[in-house]
Image (cartoon, rainbow over all chains, first blue to last red; front, top):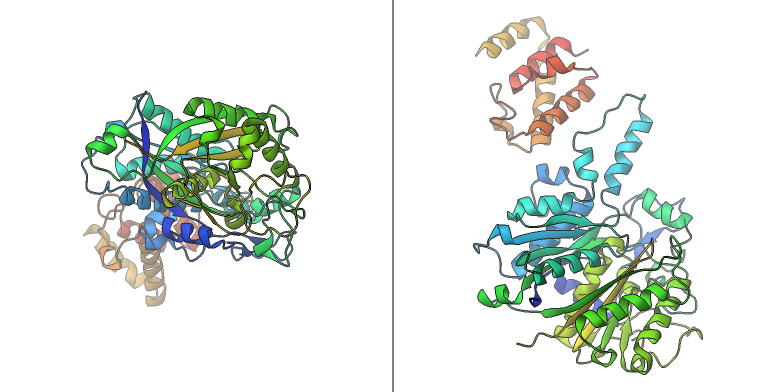
Length: 415
Length: 96
């Protein structure tokens, strides 16, 4: 099978609106959480989130275009554009038939659905749905619009697996390249669910932190007082290419994808398996696919959402898979800073993992105040401060409601 | 040209105020929805051939006219509204 490399990155996150700003925020250990500005949340149980800041789609596209897209699609277009330019693809004569787009979104156009329904319910029953309602809402439209924008005629669709969505997108793109179906992909994911039903829905499940008096410390994975995740939003884009294609055009290579794993908990709609069964399987599968052993991995970017159960089962799974080698790892949850970007989490965390390899820096798990005795103190959870370390290979986990588990292994590129 | 003549006749029927109100509202809706420059929005301009609208844009424009002028435009009438002038003419004759 062919080797697959990452040659371009784009990010729009609560920490910053480019990869550079995002990475600087991660290394500095900044929190992207703050009181909600997108709507009046005064009656909501959770009144803060990790919003994208200072973003205006009309700085990136004309108003007519912007108006026909849900925010999740704005995030897709803008991050893909950054990645495309970053990869040096602008102005190149690409073979569009060998280039594809696989994009992840857990929810799609929730903002659009909410506002169209609201207008209908507030009316007299006469349907006045906008003709762009359906094409704005559907969760595959970002992939479709990206293919139109770049003239990519290869495989094109969206992956939906809740919070694992964009890892599934990356894995599918990786597979199609290594199988020889296509040479280049725009992949990643985006999500824009900080709106009334998004916050209230996750609140009703008791999934969100309610630490309204101190939003910036609310996402505290592995801390004794963690009380749920912080809703985030944004997007992340990666350009994947076959190694041959990248070398032929003299591309700068960030990292190689070594392998990937997939599994299901087959246990509960939202609760993780208490012993981390699915998480154990997925990391084993990813290592086997990569041809790497536990001792070859230096960093795990965990799913680590700061929920009481999820964090626990994921560490159990790491100990199941890595055994004694778990004590040599750096583990961190960058969701302590970004919040949880849901379907975009896999993409932005892939970028964090790739940058960790390129820069030799492990981004921290911030907001650690009190040890939870449930966690083995021998595991280096990279609390509060970034750590310098040569990263040969990094494994990035994301898990989704429904029990979907995904892991991707990135490694330093060696000719 | 035919539409222009019609507009001139209408101008005598309607108050100056009403006239410019409807026409200017129609123009500003078109500028907003189609993202075009105001000086492109001439009476002869066709939504699809001159102003870059696709079939969904055209449906949305009709809906905006209905909302703005509080009327319902039947489909067979809507099919005949393909230029700026046709829209203004129709709305001046039918708006409440």
